[in-house]
View 1 (cartoon, rainbow, N blue to C red):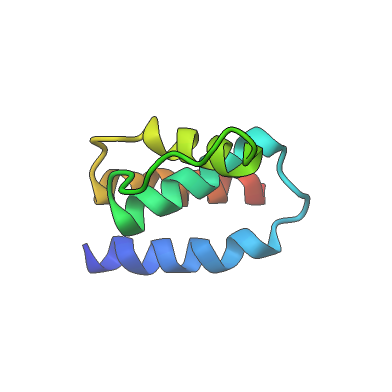
View 2 (cartoon, one colour; view 1 turned 90 degrees about the vertical axis):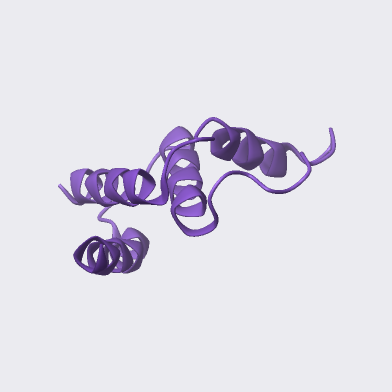
Amino acid sequence: MSDLKAQFEQAARESTELPSRPDNQTLLQIYALYKQATAGDVNTKRPGMTDFVGRAKWDAWEKLKGQSNEQAMQAYVDLVNQLKG
């Protein structure tokens, strides 16, 4: 687990230095995987109708409900490594 956690933390740092900005859907996936890995299942109320960005983030995170922290960390690391090229 500690090796995966170290890889995850490294990927989190590298995610801010990607060669090009990912599309919005990929950014939502990065956000959701990070939240699932660090906080677990969504634990907040869904944002209101006028908060489009907040709702999109919440919905992306909600789709990962039930995924373990370790699975989310590995998926996050894999996605960031893929985006690095």
